[in-house]
Image 1 (cartoon, rainbow, N blue to C red):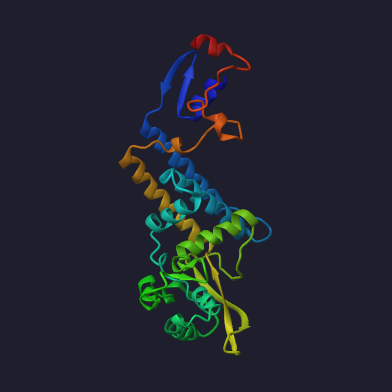
Image 2: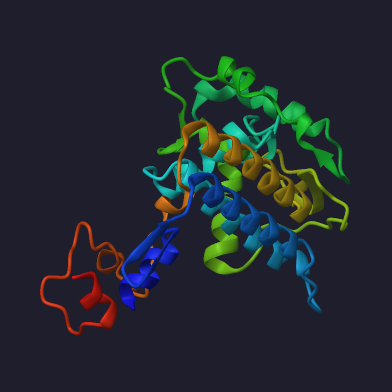
Length: 283
């Protein structure tokens, strides 16, 4: 029975020793249909309190699964960022979050950053207050890079690299709060129709200049994450057909939580606990 179940999960069926191989096109179609339906179901979730938070948690896990098929040999962070940046059709993904950049510059007295500090503080001050402020107000990566100290190699505050302030990287940090702590790290007032990331000034805080400035909270709406899922899934479909790749090969199927035990090619059973009539027929 174990052999039959494993074959079905892997896209093959075996009845009384006769194996029926499922064509690759059907495997891809089945996978895409299941994931498309999954994303649609997420969009319809209704709970009594804060449904957007639960939708976001599920959307980022769906993105993780898509990324695992696209980049099976990459780590979680790298494959998530590569998927969203390369296939998410997100034109502000590479921009630097200005409030995060200012927050970093507030925390260093290094004189090499003075030109960048003046530029960034002035630019953020022009935002005023209120909201929403959309990401097209953020500077492009090359614009900030051109003001970066040439001898610094883009490292700020010890190990904080400039690239970590890109939105595609910040989205991964946002994803971590959702997945590991079941919470949204920032405060924002997103409408049900919101489908683009934005900043909202929630309250005021004291700056290094000892006057009041808006506290900008970055929000990645549930509608935006839904769009990312659909866009990345569409790109995945083209990729699977182009590369003739079985999406199920990126996942280990089985009932053991230790993945090694589910991989009988690399870790075969040599002294079976039990045998079944199907195993007898196969022999």
